[in-house]
Length: 76
Image 1 (cartoon, helix red, strand yellow):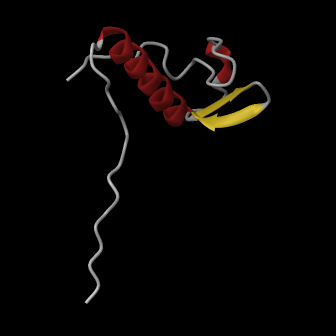
Image 2 (cartoon, rainbow, N blue to C red):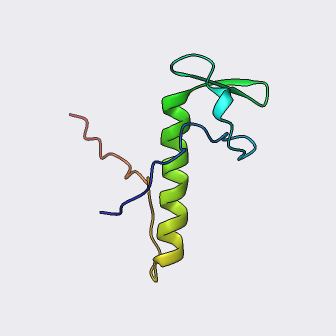
């Protein structure tokens, strides 16, 4: 398990990377760079990016995150 800070994750624009506290116009909405996003999606995306940067910097082996195995399908 890797601990990742969630600080300012829902107030940082995923388009330009700028922290914009005034971009949350309503609860749950983030408006910046002429785009409208759900604030929870912004937060989750920023936390994922922090995790990927943190693990890539500290990993000595190649780490694959989010890769899915192709499901095996058997037809009868």
